[in-house]
Picture 1 (cartoon, rainbow, N blue to C red):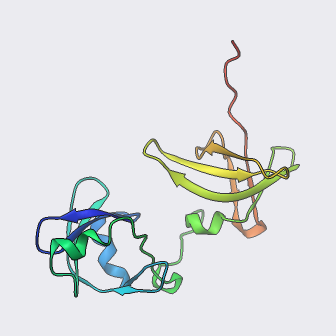
Picture 2: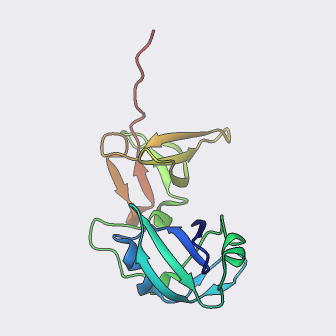
Length: 159
């Protein structure tokens, strides 16, 4: 996601979801939700999971500022296949959420990270949703081959 402009020459700050920020350049053109294509002309690491990117055709700060908030995507074919036991977050969307006994609880709607670690959003049959920490304790099984995850909702201290 483009989080803002950087400097005066059209660069933007991009929050990456790659192993390293430099990895963003390996996927080819980046796409927006509305289908626009952006070719990376220059890329360097920023702070943390951030890359500083200059896109072809974006040459000043005003143009860069219009991109703030844009989500960037790559075609699935550009991604390497996951290793055994690994998965992409997109692979989880729509999976059945079960308890440890195999009872259906709901469906995975999204995976989020609001800054304190990943959380998985589960939609229950009553259409209500709940965020579950995406940890080994709370989500001990991710079984994409069989279309399911197992969740163990955290217990909160009663007062």
